[in-house]
Length: 272
Ligand SMILES: Nc1ncnc2c1ncn2[C@@H]1O[C@H](COP(=O)(O)OP(=O)(O)OP(=O)(O)O)[C@@H](O)[C@H]1O
Ligand SMILES: [Mg+2]
View 1 (cartoon, rainbow, N blue to C red):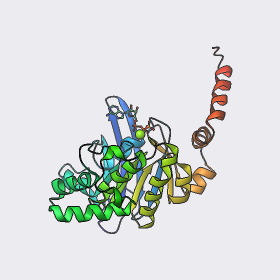
View 2: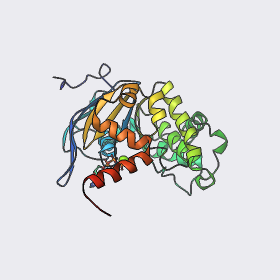
View 3: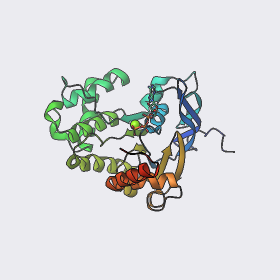
View 4: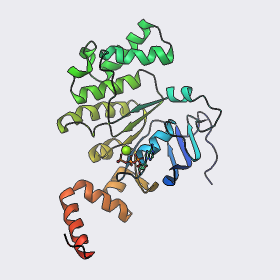
């Protein structure tokens, strides 16, 4: 049995054990077991409603699990006595929507949480903001307002804001799905460089080329369970489960999926 809690410094960076989450009588996560090693990049894929966002949100306690444990760096974050704020400081999260403050400059967006949450002084926060803007290739936008930036640039600012807090782990929930196609590449390039630096990352994404090239593992979820978990080449290239194959075929060829659906409707005897 792998139910032993990991020990600080020796076990996986993220460890999820028997995780369940229900909203009312809707059981969204039905027993997830997943480990992410230090420095590992795990991409989570799966159909809409399969529980991907809920899984990430349970890792940093934006949602409280109904049952099960989550450990980050050996600390049980689901322990009722845990200091939630201390836990969240160790985990950076990037969402589909960037949620930057429109009335603050890029630098101010990065310094505000450092000063409020980490109590850094103004000069230190500004120095760390500058370092992280450089890291995402936006040093020259330090004094700009978010509205003057492209969606891709705003998302890179949101990544820099998370990095400025010095997280041990980064969670990304479809960070490029709100972007115009031509802006996706720059955001993925920043994420790839973070992966190369050894950041531990869980990434919900439908960018299969990113998953193939950058992820150490790909996890396919459906109906609140992990259906398949393995190397990208295997899960994407040679899925073992029919549900994974079906999902990937729809993702890679939506036109084909439509034909398939029409055909199965006809087989099911439904007439328009
Ligand atoms: N706060 C909430 N209250 C009630 N139900 C919720 C809440 N958050 C999520 N759900 C439900 O949980 C299920 C899983 O949602 P979740 O957002 O985790 O799926 P997802 O895999 O991220 O989907 P998508 O690909 O569309 O983002 C859905 O049925 C959703 O309606
Ligand atoms: Mg989601």
